[in-house]
Length: 196
Image (cartoon, rainbow, N blue to C red; front, side, top):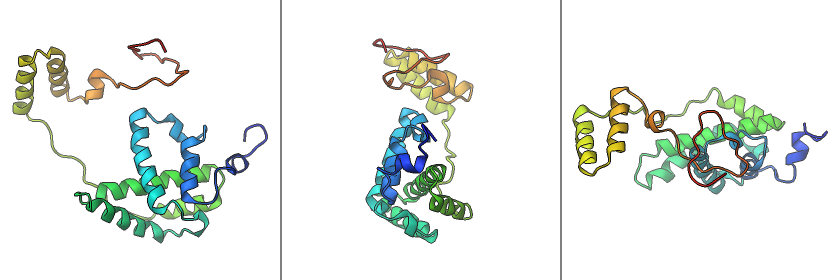
């Protein structure tokens, strides 16, 4: 509640009862967890939200039942297989974004969202198996030799450190992102480029 206005009243002009409008509220509401996402994660979420809007965005939240989620999963999987994949990643991502939207709706006081989110807790959806491919020493050595040949010593160093210490690339070089207006640097941030 902000300034004696509860979330239902504050979101009322944007939320017309549809899943698509709930997605709009999730993306634009200043109190939404979406605002805390890193830029690269926000881009991924945008793609999932777009898919939801295009396929089931006109569905009225009050008329959704839990078994609809299984049908949507199949729809998203089939939609993705037409693009050359088995569709599991796309379908599972759609289900995850529905969970996120229902959580947001629950936090905003929309009772049907809470009901649907609780129903989802007992539902299982197939997802891609975890990756089990790792770089071999021979691959890393070939990369290092090519980087040296090209004079890219920094790339060679980063790859060697990443491989030797079992680190992710972000752990070695950090994350690059655009700075939004009004950003306040945190401890450990390194700002490169124009003044912010």
